[in-house]
Image (cartoon, rainbow, N blue to C red; front, side, top):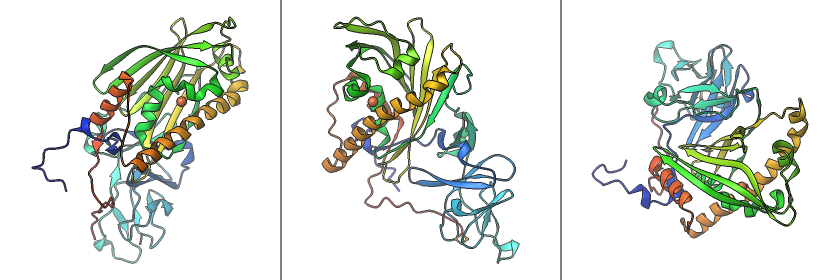
Length: 367
Ligand code: FES
Ligand SMILES: [Fe+2]
């Protein structure tokens, strides 16, 4: 336990990669479609293994994914009615986390159960509140792009990247890295238009200029062909706004008339105890073109295009993580003011990781 007489460290002076994500928010841990009735799946939020259980009837619930007996994952167990039974000796746990049956013991002597987490479903995702459960009802779910808007088609994705979640926030907010994507997007240069900041959020707005007429096909199909004047730098008229509303991130593209044409929601969920692996849950909503079914025709091409770009980002962020590990800390030389502000926001809103030699958590179970 930390010594309460010690003054807490200044978060702004902390190595950003040693700042844990704040658990007092709703985080998606799985897609609803992946958890069938009568089944359970194992997920992680940082150092917390969590079992999601969809009973035969009723809503999904979330339990600590360790049997109180010998800490075997409950997600390997069997769902029977409203409870999940550990795969080893068959201890059964209900949605309250209480142990409700030990098959070889009398009902009067049941041991304590396991921790539970508030759990909700929205936008095709299963959200869990990993922090202080008493706060869960007062914290809203995030806005989930245009997932419920029939005028948009929404793509779901959830890649794992071997890096700290903060690299992901920096990567999306900092559009100056389009140089990395020059093979996919052509020569495109970001122009920073302005920013907005407030309690728990920061936003950057950009437009782009293309120096050549290499507009990619997927982009042309969605936004329409831009007028090209070969040899001249072309203004791209859409405005891209990227906002970190802690701990979530969104990217919106508005056309020259101010209409929303694309919206991305993403959240980066640490899924390892050491903080060096992150699973993104993302929703990419694209306005359906006027021609019916055109969106379905171009959808696979859009998927390939966005995957290629993401693969380039993934490789870079994993290299950043490897450099942090090799150098023993964050040697970032940040020159772009909006990214500096973003880094401060992530530090202030996050939880400074305690420096312990042994990252193993001691679990307190009844016996
Ligand atoms: S380890 Fe779960 S019932 Fe024994
Ligand atoms: Fe990128």
